[in-house]
Image (cartoon, rainbow, N blue to C red; front, side):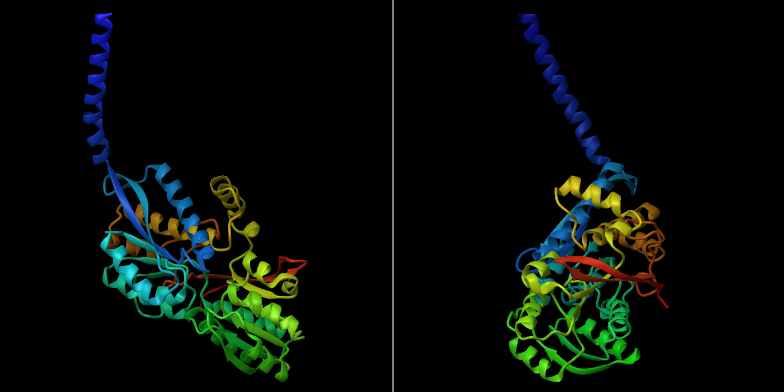
Length: 386
């Protein structure tokens, strides 16, 4: 009995010694690579932020299982996340907080209105940034650190305007935007494309990303009898806007951007949602290069369907990680040239690469329509950036 206790004591001591012997050595072989992420994680836009975060999380968890070697050590990727509340002033504050955490790159922000002011903080710190933002202004600032996850509004707005005039046959168009960088920027591009396609913009109205009563605006537009109405803004506004259009007897089709193509819009608009059109950068999930695998992996991890932005966030994270792998380093100055020259096949496309501004070279935009309460694909337009 005494001999048994002595053996257990020796075994326990050996285990502790082993822990000390291998623990620090294991830690010494591992490098924690922090990647900053900021998006609206609370408030009415939090569903966008959650969708984006889940896509990033899926990518980082996959990368950690691969045992990727960077700077001679096994990389363990960690997400340093902050809630920017979709507010430009808050975004600049959290951007500095993220920089102070010692991150090696930025995956965010989500909104154009937060991404643009925050991008100067990251550029000054020498940090590559891959954002979901779609405003042309983001990559037009001359920074060598700005890259996108999705097609820009210049490209999407051109597709929307052409579709309204040529496919819907709407020659007179009214525009409404929410005065955010995203909403105003997209509406500006649609206006140019409508005129270029032979249509005419007969009215331009403005609201905010906090409004929910559009009766006055819609009453003014009804008197001008537009053949179509385009709204640049969020589903929190387009949902009730569509419902109020039907209440006022305004039967012109409502066309909007990707932030309207959501389940939230369907819930907010109710039965009035039918007949609404929305554009979305990229192709439908089932038609993406590896969309079916991404969808299966996402459902297994999060027990629900992916939203619109998750696959683009997933590819954005892998774009940065792949650039680090090619450089053999997580140091921003080392992998930034690899990111600029990246060519890879991802979940969303087999041809992911950036032009000199950081915009995606492959342009694909899909138009959807609500039929019987569900979004259905109407048309996909694919081209290359000029």
